[in-house]
Length: 494
Ligand code: BG6
Image (cartoon, rainbow, N blue to C red; front, side, top):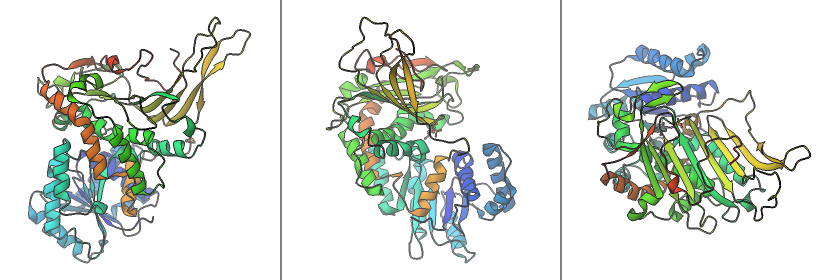
């Protein structure tokens, strides 16, 4: 698929996401000469800025994010693409003026991608305005809309939002973003599974004991108190990013890597997840909230002392969950997922624990370390694929150690690409394979809805964990005593 020139219209261009992700990603695409000739970027913001203020603003965003010096030649090419449109997104004039500006013959490409980096509560209204002002008409070029998560607040609100936006757009025009799908290592999960025939025979209930997906962050909620307190960790990370990772680990090989084929298989996984009845929520899910503690040697406040957090908040900053997939491949294999803010370390990983060998041959010897095999996939900060095996130690004794076969694949001179670079380019290509179809979002909400509803009622108590720890004690989720959270990507002898 070829990237086509377009006008990228960014709503919320002065906000946080734009500063730390979108503008740097577009700049990097410029530096890599990947933005098609003629592409323009129109920022929509409320502040009364002129063109030169906007350019200075973008430069400041890039400097604070990229740290290294800006390449002046690249910045000059990039800034020639940048425009600023001042307006209040709640007022129709903003859109009539925007439509006028885009149509005034100044060379804006006729294809338009609208990036909604705004509060989810504004999605419907903004799309209504765009539609009323004929900005979605495809008479002279395509129109695509990129929607940031969260898509809805629960199952009902997601359906209501979908109903509303499908009045204005067809599914082919909607790009629901889950930036985890743009991460290099996440895409590598598919390559690792489907380009290496060695693993496929083992990738099932006969050989795998359980699977873990962890996303831990050492940061807190920064200035996002308002949003975070109404979302919580389950909505913020588990319902979206972590369930997406689960689908990639568990899916059947798609018939092709084409968007619909891939998404069909992901939906099948989500549909096969055994629903959690409300009475079983406590056996399947756990939540916690960070108290004060130390992170990287620094004293940090507890969640309740963060800005904009009510003193009696029971919002979870840690959530863990156990799921079963009722399908042929995975029946009986637990999938454990956890995520948390202010944890000991920032790390995302998938850990696959294989079964123990059927016979323990080494009783009565000095062998002490008989771990099962693990396949470990580090998503960030370290990108790696490792397979842990038990080997005999050199020497006369029969002693073993764990040896890690390391398939880390990035050469030193190969730069990591931010997920948004990939995804912003996919929009220009019309490639929706790394974006979510509505049924994926819908099934993901179905899975977590009973937990959300139960937690919403039980507001009197929430477990706490000290900031800087690995979260609350939730080992009751595990099916067996031999199962435990795996936090390290280097060999651990248990
Ligand atoms: C976002 C969440 O979707 O993902 C944040 O809203 C979270 O709370 C972030 O910090 C994590 O993304 P990444 O790419 O930094 O792992």
